[in-house]
Length: 162
Image 1 (tube, rainbow, N blue to C red):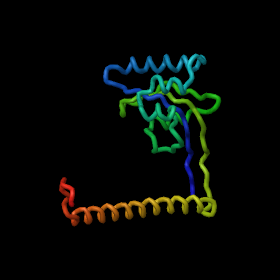
Image 2 (image 1 turned 180 degrees about the horizontal axis):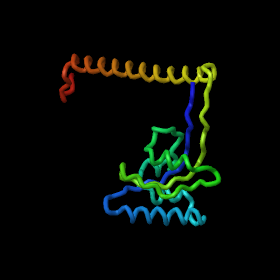
Image 3 (image 1 turned 90 degrees about the vertical axis):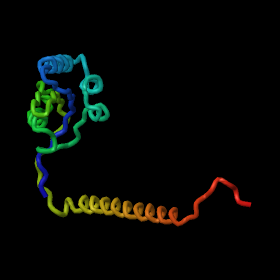
Image 4 (image 1 turned 180 degrees about the vertical axis):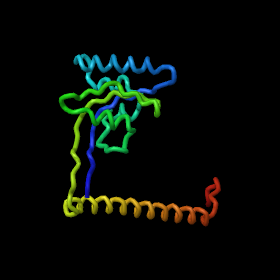
């Protein structure tokens, strides 16, 4: 079982409207400069400037990702970062019309694990999937049973019976 290189960064994300590319680039460059000078914390910058609601909720934490799990611009920029150089340059992604500023959190080197090492994780994941599937089957069955009982029950009128 092989795991690829995995990266983890914080991300400030801004939309890149046509005609406003230079303004967005300059805004992110200013934010970068304030962070680099120690005048602004990256987490605070995410909350204050990131236009992604998801990023605000997670303080910009990308969680672990490998190549192909994020847009190429993010992966390529994150790949260049490390503990000694944690702050990216402004990243412009014309394809997705987004601009980013990244801050290095961690990296996990590629690794190969034996089946015996990953077997408990695989079993747990399969059990969780099976449990969720069975819960859905039970809920669907109960819904169907309720609908059948509701359809077969006599209509209730607003008059009390005596």
